[in-house]
Amino acid sequence: MKYLILIQSNPRSLAVWDTLSDDERTAFGRGHLQLNEEMAEAGVHVAGEGLADPSLARFVSVRNGETIVSDGPFAEVKEHLAGFYLIDVPSLEDAIGWAAKVPDAANTEVEVRPILDMSGWEF
Image (cartoon, rainbow, N blue to C red):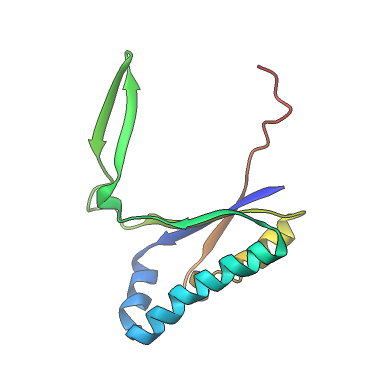
């Protein structure tokens, strides 16, 4: 079963980040690279990426057949998606085990969410 591990940036995680030395920040980034390797070696890694600053994001909607693009999210947003891992493991317990290895989990929460399996749906 596939699970998404969501990494949020929020005031608590940013406060911790501000206290880290350059060496600690480098070790944090290396921790993510090592986790990628460990997941790949275990055969559970499907995808994973960090996300660019939210100021570079765009909201897209369609109304009456017209595509509307706007800037977003706005400065008052205190939390945003910072990255993710998509893994394929047998159980929620396995997904939680991998989530516990995400470097961010040491300072804030990471979210584990099952992927909706639509393979048996008829169209």
